[in-house]
Length: 355
Image (tube, rainbow, N blue to C red; front, side, top):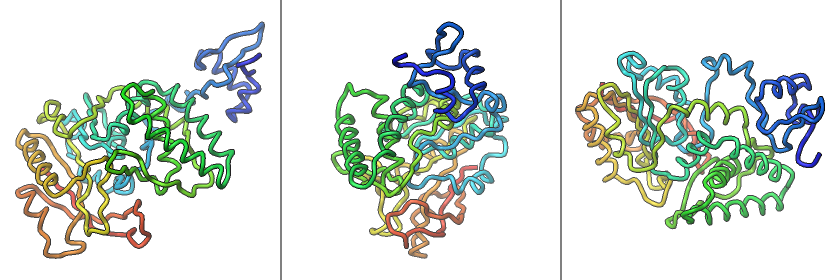
């Protein structure tokens, strides 16, 4: 039947047993499923449901970021956890991340703590659109991503490169349109992140994404199970796009706040702050420090990351002086996204703490 597939065909497509497909149909867990006589028929573009046998134990399932991001904190989580407030999840019942990026710390928090309220924000409106589409329209998003993955992986060499740049041009055209399809934009955002060079998100001064294609042979563009789980975890998260200071009304003495701003470059050649068309310079670092101190004065528990200027200049006390009287800790970190191989390796980073 045109537009539908049988349970056997779905089992082959999804790499699960025929019996499992029948169970999913009988539990009404596949959107649009119907019966034809004694046989289930399934929409040809249906998304494989998350495994309910696993999600029954969802407290044991760890959600992870759905995109790569320069400066992402996935490799530092073991260290960062030792700096979380001791009363997180007890007297500290709220979490806020005003510069969320890929959200490694966000997902670590919601994986491991029961909190009453969570808010995230970022000035990158396209990143926040992706969060919103995963939260609110994940089925439609997955359908588009599955199509992108199929088309991308069936191409090789110049044909694949041409496809990538066609998608990049489409994305850049859409971000300039007020009434653009938000779900398509989010799908393109994720596709480009999974296939571009080093997973960077960089734009030029016109706000156009300009990262070239990466050399991945078989990238996972549509991780169905992961995105469905992210969608589930985001249902109780407030998501905002704007300036980090727009979070002030949410933050009080019951809030743990984590800041992961664009890092102060260690040298001119190391500079990478173009997540959007504006730069994050020393003046912005001073303004951020003032806001962090303002939140600390309200009684919020604030933790912030940044680069350590002493990696390249032992006499550079920029942050040590800027964040007085807050506590400054130096930790070891590994750069995972850098355009130069010799710029990847162990360095010192700062953790600024108000408590």
